[in-house]
Image 1 (cartoon, one colour):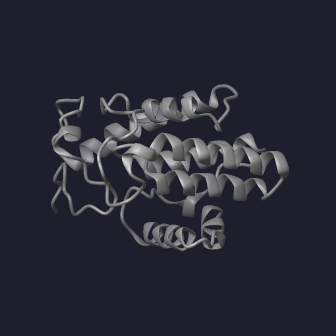
Image 2: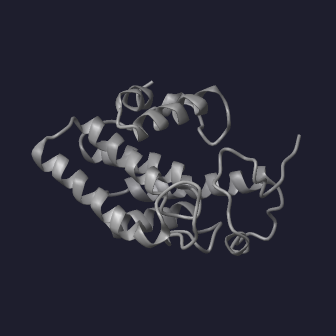
Length: 196
């Protein structure tokens, strides 16, 4: 089984540029599973930080701080918007503007009861993953943001198919399929998936 640290054929991760790869902090990491484990420990600490007290999820500074908390012990670029092009997401120069627009849209939905709490959280999470603001970790980041926003709106965390979506499998395939349908303006399958 191949466990290359930076396997570009890995569906679960957005490929990093050479410069971004050089920003790995722990020197002991040489295999993908070691990277995944280090990131998961960091994400666990970020989750504890995020739920320790009331926070406003619909705030750009909070979102950057959350990403930094999720990946800051592993990557020097954590919490900083990407500056390089990707095959997914918006152009790097429009990230800050698009994230702010997503926040303002979600604030409007909340203030005017445009959608249910679950749908607001899912739509916001989907917008963030579509923007792809950071060099990597966008899926895990956007799912945690969805959970935190659902909680802020009085709901429980989502189940996300009851599986670790970092690992490739049937559940991840269903998640990706639901994202693609949502990209085409049908949020229904993603709304169903997050509570499955």
